Image (tube, rainbow, N blue to C red):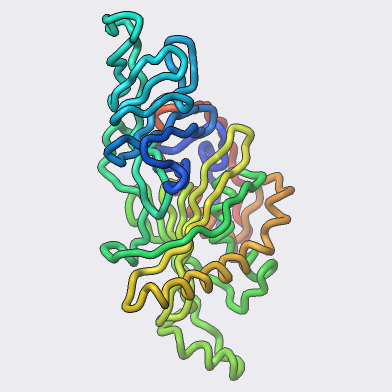
Length: 343
């Protein structure tokens, strides 16, 4: 079995995919207030209007470059803190106190934003996207409860953090998992790919036979990726699945800023039961994150010699290579090649 494929986009700091990227926590943006946000080398002003709706646009006033986050939100518009130029929801300057004519002022670019899972997300693709923010497919259509897990920085590209969740080999070496995962890919659409474990639990001793009673077929483990920068893990026995979302964004110096979100569906007595479930979800996430923290603090990722156990990672790379580029940002692409797959 041989594999050879060029890599242009995966792990490339100069490529930003079209997709939703988290910027801020919703609770941090109060009504009629503005905050700064950054994605790679692009600065934004994010503000919540009088109507409660969040909006995003280029951060700097085209007059003298003042950051609009220091300005005032008026109704659903924002006013520059320096000379009080006022921009409406379309980024159009609608008032200059010193003169009546605003026709010579360039417009600010606005960006689609949505709120979900307690986060504010910015769309990097088309101006009016037809898709929503990432959801857990198994819970789509259900009301959700959530809480925040860890917010973190990793010294590597978001793609490297993401493939850790489908690195079947490291579950044995780092986490001592008793099962060799067989992660089978399923492309849900051009933006989304899902990996599900197909390995049954072994029944070599009494404990494993007892645990296997809670799994219909195989050990439940499922990882779903959107745009290569948002992923949701589903683990747990058939009667209780734990969901953890990883929302990642790249930094201009090649690192990853991430936020984990713990998710469960609403159920009877949610106010009593779900805090316990979310707490257990946090423990599950912390267990798997603990062994990887040191590795990601020093890794110099270079995927040159894949082996058979890396097939899921190779499938993810192939899917990511098909992603469209964002409508802004540096897009210089350099090509490299994987060596033949062992075996």
